[in-house]
Image (cartoon, rainbow, N blue to C red):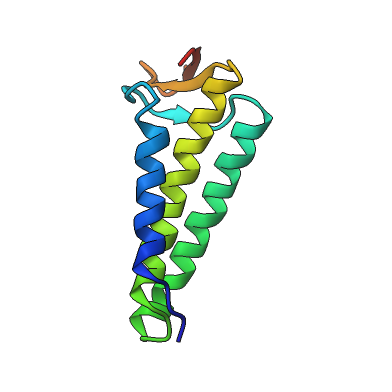
Length: 113
C-alpha cells in the first residue's frame, strides 16, 4: 500500500496560502490560458485531477492510502493557484467566463489580475 506523509499535505496547504494570499479574490470562473507557463500549470492541474479520479477505486479497495487522495486534491489546488500567480507575475490577462445570455452567444473576456 502507498503511504503519503501528512506533512506533505500540510506543506502544500501552506504553499497554497503563501501564493494565494498574493492574488486578488476570484469573482468569476477562470478559463485556462494567460501565457505559456500558466497554461502548462493549468494542464498539469487537469492531469492531477485525472490521477485523483483514478485513485478513487484504489482507496475504496484499501489498496492506496486515503492521504494520497488528499495529497492529489491539494496538489491540484496548488497548481491552480500557481497558474494564477504565474499569470499575474508575467502580466498576462486572465480569461474569465461570462455566462451567455443565450446558448448561441457564448462569451468570455480577458481580465487583468
